[in-house]
Length: 358
Image (cartoon, rainbow, N blue to C red; front, side):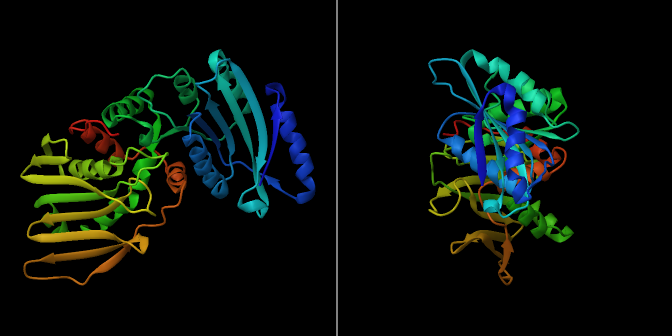
């Protein structure tokens, strides 16, 4: 449930107070664990960004400051609105504030000064930058300067190489924690591979890898068109963990590594699975064949089969977790620091032949 009021920028806090006074009879408790600043350009993807932010609020009450820029407006404007968000269709006793800022033209430079008075003190500030960080933008520097942690979405990047290079630069020069929604979306597969090869024997077999095949869901939507990213992340993560040396790549997403490792990324189409989601992983290593594939009727479950020329182990299942909209943002907000595996994966990406993601 959301109660929203369009207000003058000078009256944001006073109008919020009026809304809370009206809610007093419902015994709602005002709560905020952190500040969440969101920046996005107005597009069909804006509603998707709002939906994933709503998932965060449902689990962790926070003060949300949602900034949307209208790049097609003919005249400059600065519009503000306030609302109190009550999760779970009003059933919760906890509610939190949301401040919406719509901006266009010359008023863009006013946004940081408008935001600052409404940041709750002594609470972390998370910035969800839903645009391509490799493209210069006047709001990025002032907003990142007040952020405790910046969360990006590589889906917003037209090219993965400049995206990876920019994030490494941001982490190094600004000394700030960074995160990526697509990295969070691969967590289940990373856990599956790590838990499968967690013994000395299995790890020794993995180090004898000769081939790797990743298959992802090529179902394009208006929100997702860069569908190879999660598969590329898994490939670069494995390469960085196992110290492969990249040799060459082709436009058909075939990669050659030293020592004598061939990796391929392929696609298929599953209508009801998230766009770009990894569907299966196949590894041949040291005479061992490892096959892990999602179960069509239960997308969040993976069937695992390990075999060799002499043996065939009993298949078993691994639970990847639900792939509900917004869970990746929840994950990255609740994670502290910057993943060293993520940074190593980004460095590995800069060494691979990537090409255009669209």
